[in-house]
Length: 384
Ligand SMILES: Cc1ncc(COP(=O)(O)O)c(C=O)c1O
Image 1 (cartoon, rainbow, N blue to C red):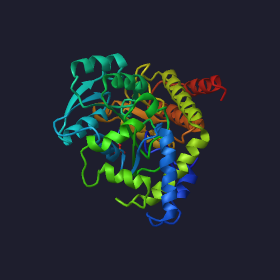
Image 2: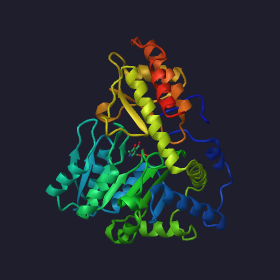
Image 3: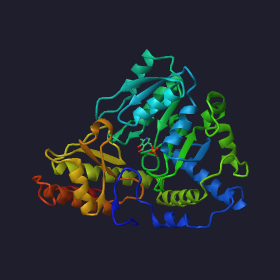
Image 4: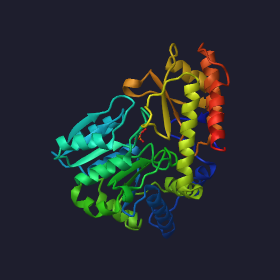
């Protein structure tokens, strides 16, 4: 597993395989050449499989937020009300995004650590029948809360209201089946569970929504879906210059993902998440996300009493591991471990070992091996 001096265990960017990094070192070619057109087409086709759609997919030079903006533009027109289900900091991005496009966000906020059930969405739609769309995170990376997208999509479909899902911290690590479940728009960024460096926004549309989306949306010069979709059919239909070398990396990583197998990959993420949760619990650390709403890709946990985030960050780095702190209202209260993409079981062992020693160095009453034992037991339980 490639990494620099520090083992990257943040919830994005994530570890990038050597093969993927090396793919970027190939010569940059003309973006409208037949060679690149073929590479781009392969990436688009493989992305369709990861998103579970036969519809349109856009590869956009930009971060996850660029993908969010393109996705929101697909459903938000000036004056349209959009139901935003907020389960953490990134729900605030959706709210801000809707407002920036002249829409009116109707925000429902989950209790800290919780997400939304189908019943919650039903009740909210009962009171807000006029909304143009529902938007939410699959996983809110700030709280590590995961929403049950399949059930929520069924509910939204029953109401006939388009569903926009921020899959930035899930796509490639947790199951998403857009066409089967009825998720109309879903997006991610390259630097999370897809295991690619930062720099690409990926937006996918369900097969049934793709036909409607051009007419529904609000487009700008850069975020012009009709033009972008034409370019996605063939890069010969130039609209904006693709991030050629990042597309090489994306194609390489998608090959790795599909070679692992989506089912296997989702299973691996589930086991990694369980192992991290069990080891943190064994260390007496409280988790942010409640049972039933826990993500497979990231775990947020409260800092033990007396431990300041800057000290834990420093101690972890001194032991070779980079983890993340809190965002928004959880800043200074929590830490987060990313376990998505190309991160594997061995990296978890190294991370929990470093965490135990860091906590001990900070005066926390932990017995070395306490968390590792739970981690080992969990892996062994799954015959790993
Ligand atoms: C769930 C979620 N949505 C959106 C974003 C924003 O993505 P980016 O920072 O790539 O613009 C992030 C970033 O971490 C995220 O985790």
